[in-house]
Structure formats: structure tokens, C-alpha cells
Image: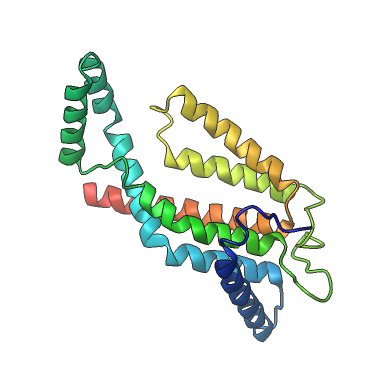
Length: 224
């Protein structure tokens, strides 16, 4: 399977670094007596998510703060709908009072994007070398999953992650539509991607879900 050319050159340095780390982690699994590229992919994904956790936590906290003040924002927007300047001023005052910032969740996401894209290009056409790299029920990580189990897991974990990140009781129609379409889209493209890449996505989602649960737990403790 050929590597996608779009932006591939931009992320080439990160791709080379990720490839080197993945190979090193595979060597580690060899030392442990369980040589397996699938395990190495999982270890690399967990390592990356741990390293960027401070950014992830900041992003999650910002999103949670914005969800918390949604009812107040709607009241202000309704009250000052005929006076946009006053409405904007009142919203800024609300953000400052509640410690929320609609843009603060974007920066951590932008910082993490090169890492995510680097992993994408690394695993899309990674040269495993030698025999077909199998893992659990997967006969070859460089090919699609013939059982469709990984694409299903990619869709299911994407849906669960989105559900945890949004307050469904206050979610608008667009948000609910996205929570349906995005997992289906991810599941569909996973049918066409190498199993190694989809394994990375599923592992990333699972770690993200755990981090989301932990962040919410810590925030609830502080609030109490």
C-alpha cells in the first residue's frame, strides 16, 4: 500500500523519529521474549499519550468549562441578540468570571496534531520487514483486518470518546449528528487502512477515554 502523498513531506522528520522509536520498542519486546510489532505499536501509542497528557488535560478542562457555562451563554445570547457588541462584552465577562476560554482548547490540539499526523504517515506504510507481522487475530498488520473487528472497535471507541467529551443532555442537533456521523466515517475508512494504523487509532481512543475519566474524576474532587 502506497503512502499518501498529501503533506507527507511536511511530517517526514516526525515520521522518521516515530519509525525509529517503533523499531526500538520492537527490540524491547524481543528482549522481553514476546517479539511483536502489534505490542510495539500499543506501547508507542501509550507512550505518546502519556507525554502529551498535560496538553490533553488542559484541552479537556477547557472543554468541560465551556460545557458548564453553556446555559448562561444561551441566556446572554438570547437577551442581547439585538445588540451584538453588548452580547460579546457580556460573554467575555462570563468567560473571565468562570475561567473559561473558547480558544484555550485549540492550542493543545494544534500542538498535538503534528505528532498524530506523524504517527499516521509512519504506520500507513511502515516496513515491518521479514515475515508478515501478525498480532492476536490479525494475520498481517500491513494489510486490512479481514474480520472487520478493528474497524468496529475504531468506530465504537470513537463514539464513546465523543460521548464522554460532550454533555449529551445539552448537545445541540449538530453535535448529536456529528456524534453519529464521525464514528461511522472512522469505521468506514478503517476498512481501507492497514491494521497497524487502525490498532494505533483504537489504542489512542482507549487511552484518551481513560485520561478523560481520570481528568473528570480529579476535577470533581477539586469541586467537592
